[in-house]
Image (cartoon, rainbow, N blue to C red; front, top):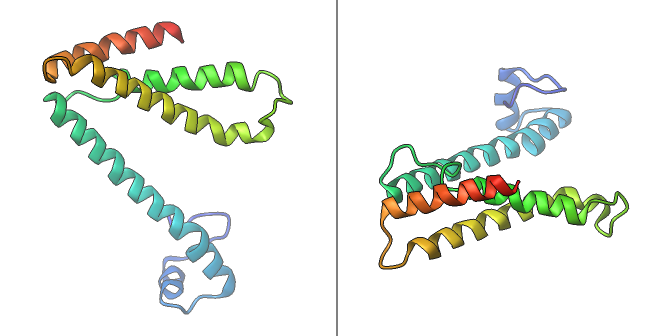
Length: 146
């Protein structure tokens, strides 16, 4: 990923740039643009795989994921509601900021659906089967709303 892009850099030039011997253009392309993006991608992948592992451990089900238990659908409902009510008019009060607010609203929707699922399944202690069944029901309800 450090080599490919609009500005081509060979692997040897990448190594030289990382060692401090690159040109100004190579430093900008590799150190300021490509390396930070690559590192963010690696950290996001680590976070997502950890979250998936935790979810599978809690539910004691190797096939459990956020799509099955309604978290994705909760995010989609929040995104659809935001698009419908806040950006229906192109010249809304948010204007071009709606592009940046939409992912935040999806995260809020996912958090709310996770909280609802936790509250509903925590009565008399959390049981993995109850958590899965409530999550599947919430997934169906949210998808019906969409």
